[in-house]
Length: 171
Image (cartoon, rainbow, N blue to C red; front, side, top):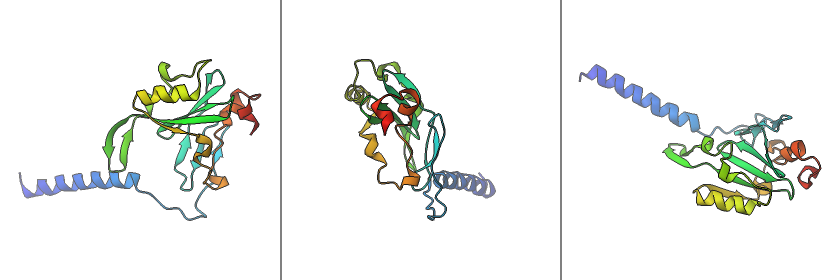
């Protein structure tokens, strides 16, 4: 292999690593650069969190008073009947320079075994998700309370949309 070809190959490899690193590098915004959360009628949103990196898709009605929403690399499931929720993270499929690579497409929309049933509770859903080696975080209502008001999205938006008479829609 000649020296010219080796230097081109090294440059290509270095640029690929730099692109990977820059794609996940944290960019610290100044307070005046931080945008307000924009949440649409379907509950999708952009600009969540103090660095504007949290975004969510449209909320879906899961039936029986439950709603679900893909948020970045995880899924929120909210029980509108009692204003509680859990966050389920997709399975780790590899590691990158940014940390674990998570495949949320494997759990959104929720597969049959994870859809809440009429007699189901969030604790049952969390247990089934844990048995599939999925990470579960409880009490999503508390998850972003430390964020400034302009950086928080309405996690109960789906309750207001699909179950307007539920306790979850009353906050």
